[in-house]
Length: 77
Image 1 (cartoon, rainbow, N blue to C red):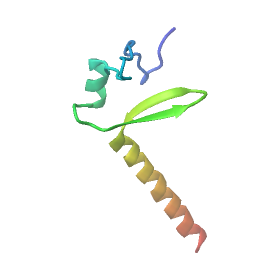
Image 2: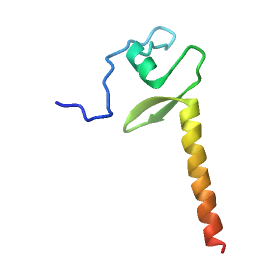
Image 3: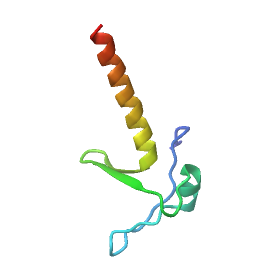
Image 4: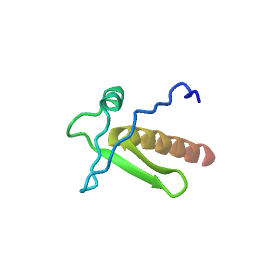
């Protein structure tokens, strides 16, 4: 199976007794994750879990809210 461009498999991790995992070094380097960074854990009962940097999600949420505001302003004209 060929992995599509822009998608990655970094390997497997084990969950420790306290629920902790180690993010593989290649993944940390690719996504600029450093000690002390805040990550958000998202979950979907069908698709599973995803982990992303909080600032990445905040940036995208800001863009969505801006588009909503633009659309609202356009409709009120």
